[in-house]
Length: 417
Ligand SMILES: C[S@@+](CC[C@H](N)C(=O)[O-])C[C@H]1O[C@@H](n2cnc3c(N)ncnc32)[C@H](O)[C@@H]1O
Image 1 (cartoon, protein in one colour):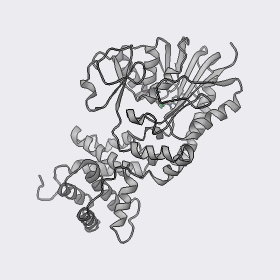
Image 2 (tube, helix red, strand yellow):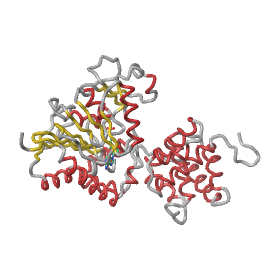
Image 3 (cartoon, rainbow, N blue to C red):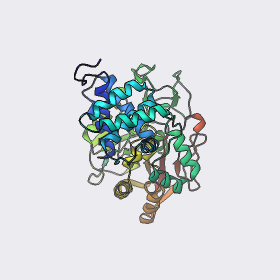
Image 4 (cartoon, helix red, strand yellow):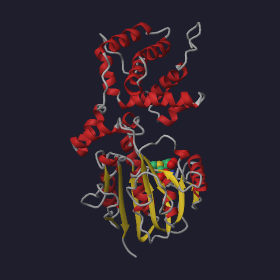
């Protein structure tokens, strides 16, 4: 209900938070999780609404901007508050089906004392004309060009289809399960169509499973079963650590972030799995003895996760990707020192940028001739390793079964025994 000064409108706090979040992501390059701090004082339903509005905005931003530009005489600056408010309002119309009166009533107070008339005019014009559905959004131009060049137009087109589909819920299991849930696309994995209420699913309280995209579950499966001592070098929050522990390896989980590592410990406690946890930086830490296998799930641009985190399409600018490539190269060279002769190094990134995947491994192999590529096995039907045995997952793969995140993983074996 609106009170006399117009500030107490139902749904307004969620839109105010959404505006701050969108600004933090687009202008300051924050992640959605960090930007969500702006909604943390709201009741959970409002905070969820703020995130949903921002998510829908980011999924369709180029098309929404084109709509806005079609209704203004002079183009609004990219970071103008009026453009931000219009983006949020149109995203609610297109992605959430918010009624016109509600989106106008919650948009205008956001520009009080500013370009209220302009926002009102543009919204009125567009709503009268009829706002199109935008079921096949455009990718940001830079991303479209990058992915078309790297993977071809069919993959870029599949990414456009994927961006507005709600991803399935993938669960990883600690044991060969008999839970009556969804369908299995790989061993110890189940896929559910409805991701709405994780904590109510059977088995949650027993800790028999955890949420993990199918693609993210593949690198840990590349660690040889015979490897006894395994280091998970960038381990938190621990999806892969749990897989490795469940596969009976003796696991050390290293991460430089204490807070993320404490989430990993909570995850281990919930699932009743064991691993030794160590707070440390890969570039400074060193083990007492070499490992039979090291998994390096390196920090990256995360562009492969664009279905759940559409902000990566805007955050991962070329200079960020270049910084990541440099950082990953350092981590790889350190991790390579900790593998015993004849042991395995599995490198993985949830990135769709070849510089962080294929080219990174080529550069590593040029520097470390004592390592060679070990072809990955086929784990999921339709997710076939490339000609050199590396696992490259791109949009469009297993699309008929719900698709999966973009990913890269390579298994490297150190010479000698
Ligand atoms: C992609 S996430 C790992 C996800 C994790 N493997 C999983 O499956 O849940 C990358 C992790 O690397 C950690 N990290 C980044 N730089 C690091 C460094 N120099 N040394 C150790 N950990 C690092 C981050 O804190 C983050 O938790």
